[in-house]
Every structure is written in C-alpha cells, then in structure tokens.
Image (cartoon, rainbow, N blue to C red; front, side, top):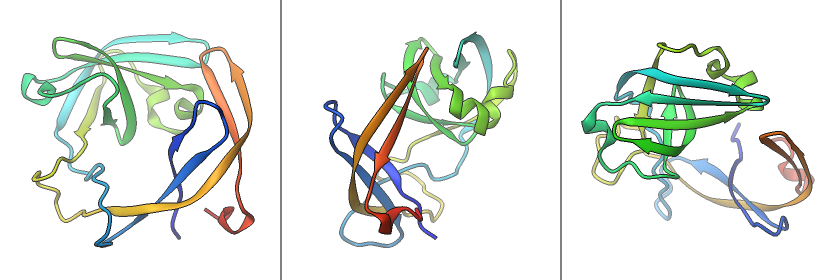
Length: 163
C-alpha cells in the first residue's frame, strides 16, 4: 500500500499537496533519506515545554558542512527541521504528536542518536532510488492550535482516504 506525504501547504489554509512516493519513475525524482546512517551523536541540550521538546545534537565538523536553517535531517529515523546552528551543535524542535509516536519522547541528555543527512545528487544512495509525483490536492478545513503545537484536519476525495 502506498502512503501520502504532506508536501506543501499554503499560508492561506486553502490548499495542500500530497506526494505519493513511487520507485523508478523516470519523469520526476525526489531525493530523500536513503536509510544510510552517517553516525551516532550525543544529545547535549534537552529542554521540555508543554507539548514541545527542543534538543541539540553535537555533530562532527564534516557532517555539519552545508547545514542551513530549515534543512531536514533524520534523527533516529524521524525527519526533523534544523531550527538553530551553533558551530557543530544543531537544534531541533519536536511537537507532542511526534513525541508520542516515536522514540524521541524517551530521549535523555547524553543519549546518542542516529543522524542521517538527506541525499544529494551524486551521493552514495545504497540502491534506494526514490521518485514521485503530486497525487492529489487536499483542503485544510480546521486548524487547532495549542501551546507550541498546531493540528490540521484535511478534506480530500474519498478515493484517497485509504492512504
């Protein structure tokens, strides 16, 4: 079974695009995470607020090359956004739903996490070529905001509900 992934949403809350991964589609390529871990690195700062966990991981200088704010990095298999960079320390924020459904809710200061950078053209990808296309459009029909979180409800044609 295929699964839909939220690709983008408009600030005016009207339209979102769903991306359905497909293998070996020669038309469009989206390079994502390959599953190849670049190393294990320590959690050096860990801060909890209601519904939000912020933490920093101390990376190697080589792994930090080219990291920018807003980039996606996989931490223990969870795609997270870089929110702060301080030399080789990279900060992430995790909302309550992700904390409940992943191991990131169990992190402790000093724990080591698996780190994976997203693939770039020409990188070793270990045979995991991924490509895809936009499958459909959904409408944001409700946004519920709580402290440090935002939950969205989407309306999509019933044929896409199984995904």
